[in-house]
Image (cartoon, rainbow, N blue to C red; front, top):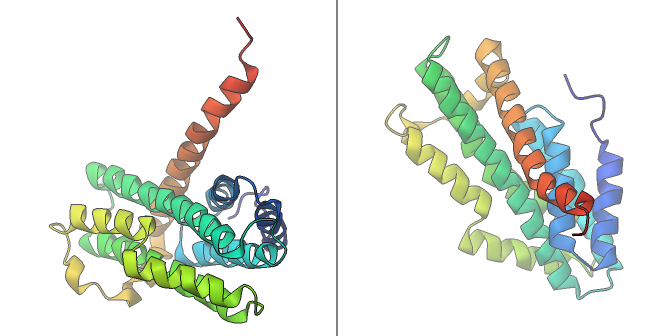
Length: 223
């Protein structure tokens, strides 16, 4: 079940577009928007794709009339999106550690299912942005494709975080032979629900920790 305060796709598109159009603090604004949208949803592939698509569509729209240079605006926005997804992957890694540590109601297939889903995270991310780029206007399309090409060449922060997770749990499951169809198991059964809930809670904690220093500094009285 989604949080009643879950932002709609239209709202995410609008906010992402405004963030890029402003031309200031694009990376940070897109990062915060993406993280907030992710934390209010179930931790699974479907939710991640929905958020990435909405944010990417907003980024493309905003870049059409950005006050900054289009390629730079898109690159900054892409990095903000990537960093938020990296934190999502980090939350999944932490959730797995906690579940594995307890060992209750946990099987090797459960682990494989969760890892298979995480293994898809970077490709889902890049393929979704690619679809948005393909549908973008003539000003944005070649520039966003160039940003994606560079990301595929050098790798993403999300991909590096996922690789860290797979490496950590490689000895517990046959990670190299994971079948992506196993990802469907993550959405079913008690383990899937427990993993999704725990990962979402961890991600919420990460988001709160990031916002806390800002709120403390804004409320601190001058000496």
